[in-house]
Amino acid sequence: MKHVLIAVIIGLFVTACDDPGELGMELLPNTDLISVNSLVDANNSAFTYLEDSLRTDETSKNLLGSIIDPVFGKTTIDMACQYRLTYYPDFQEDAVADSIFLYLFYKDFYGDTITPQHLKIYELDQPLSDTEKYYQDEDLSSYKKDNVLAEYEFIPKRTVTVDSTSGKLDTLYQTLKIPLDMELAERFISADSTQIWDIESYFDFFKGLYFGVEDVDQNGTIITMEMLSNDYVNGSAVLIYYHETNAETGEQDTLSVPLVVSSLDVRVNSYKHEYSGSQINGLIDNEQIVSENLYIQSTGGLRSKIYIPGLDFWKDSVNIAINKAELVFQVDTIASDILNFEPPARLLLTFINDDGQEYLPVDYSFSTTYYGGTLETSDYTYRFNIAQQMQRIIKGEFGNNGFYLGTANKNSEFRRVVLKGSGEAGGIKLNIAYSKVLQ
Image 1 (cartoon, helix red, strand yellow):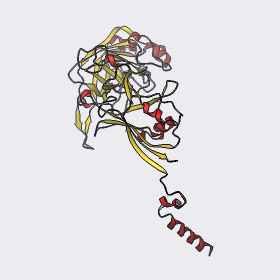
Image 2: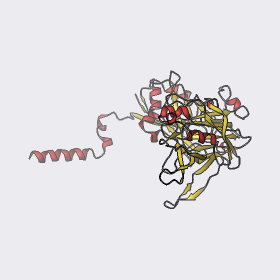
Image 3: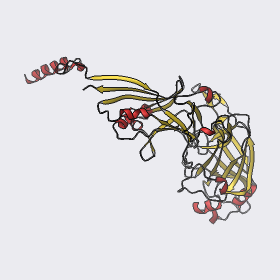
Image 4: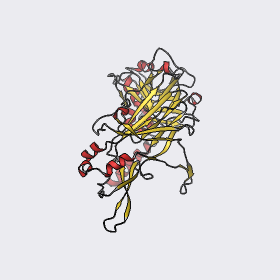
């Protein structure tokens, strides 16, 4: 009987809660308690700023090349990198060096397939440190020896094929095979074992390579170098080819010894941006001029600073709950020339704290997908959801000091985009939905 009684009570409760929205409503006053509203806030101001110093020693990929952008001016990127022996080569006394080649691989690049890139490769005279932090303005050319190991000119190319498995288009890796000065190969062949036996002695013997790039006069390219091995390519390497007498057969053996780039080796870039001759030079770091556009560029280039003064009017509104706050940025597809200059796949929005430092919004830690920032190619917008961050600003937990907008992949890809600025039709908008408890 007890079990039957419990079942009856549960059944009555479920029936009563068939419409949970009505549960207990007969106990409340017969008036609207909550007002749900929405608005679009276009009252903002935004400016273009130089990026702060960007670290370049902890990147997933390395960049190399020179480009002149019709909007953003000239960018030149050089590189320095360690190469290590994978094993100790036991050279015979009669070993003779035959050749030495540097292998570089790339698949992606940003720019044209017309303008040659001219590389100059040097041996490093100053060591790279795995405990030191390297930034974009590091003068890597000061690390090199005077003698050039190689000069190499090539025109970047892209080869696209159809993947036999998926049927989708796939871009193939390109190989650069660059002959180096034979002096380096001969020095390895004749090296004493104590010079290359342990890693400390080895990096004193051979500190690595510096890759310099000559400035282009027009157009140009920034190339994404695949320095590390992955599932599709072996990664950059220096191969020393030599021959020696086989102790067992007495015949000549042709052999090779590789110097490779591992995840333990230091890889460093230096980014040089020149805006002096560009059409946007007078807009950078200048809040006295309101620009029609905003300019975003990776590799320690440009970012935007956005102020939303309207948030101050929401402060101390304890009876307001922010349901949605979507900040929308519109790509200026004409000024950006998206057919020739692909926009970044993702941007990153950070807020400025009272200490002047930038931090990721609270919404980012909640969910990166919800937070957003991915390019919507249907309408060429970048959208960010910052409801939680805005709620904390109006509650006074954070100051309303503005936001920074920059590229998400700052040091592993080269991208730029022109956005519509504040006050422009279809420019920056803050879409807000909120609930207000009526008193």
